Image 1 (cartoon, rainbow, N blue to C red):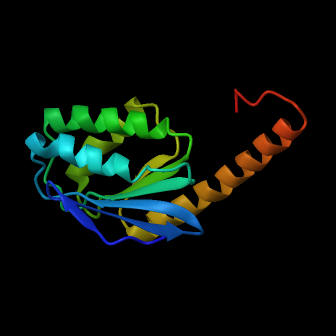
Image 2: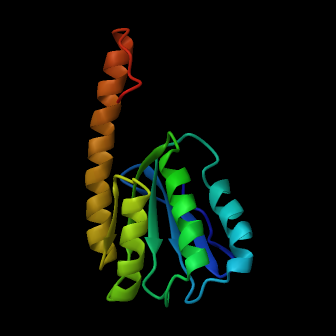
Image 3: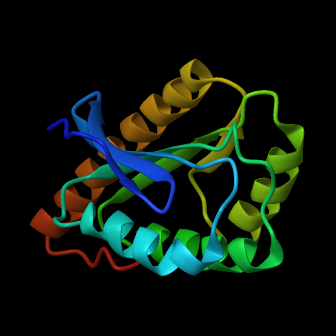
Length: 156
C-alpha cells in the first residue's frame, strides 16, 4: 500500500499504512506558493482515488505561516476531505511550531471537522489516529449490523 513520494508545489505527498488503514501523508513546505495550490490540491485528491478507509497525516512543523489565501484554501480542502465517505480521521504534526498550531487549530474547528487534531510529535499523532481507527471500525460494525437488520443508517 506504500507509494513513492511525489512533490508538487513544494508539498511532498505519499501513501503509507497505519494499522491496516490507508494513510495519506503530506509534508508542507516552508512557504506555501498560493499560485501552485490548485495543482497541489488536484494531486492530493488523486490520492483519494478509491473508497478505502483513509486517514490523513500532515506535517506542518517547517511551515512558517499560513497567509489569508492559504488559510481559506486549507479550510475548503479540510471541509471537503472530511465529507469523503472513506475519511476516518486526520492528525497534524506541528513540532514546536506554535505559530502554525495557532493558525491550523481554528481552521480545523471552524470546518466542523471531528476527528482532526494538531500534535507536537508524530508518535502522539499516530497514537491518536490509531484510536480514531478503532472508533471508526466500531462505527462501521454498528452501521453494517444496522443495515443487515434493514435499519436506516443515514444518521450514523
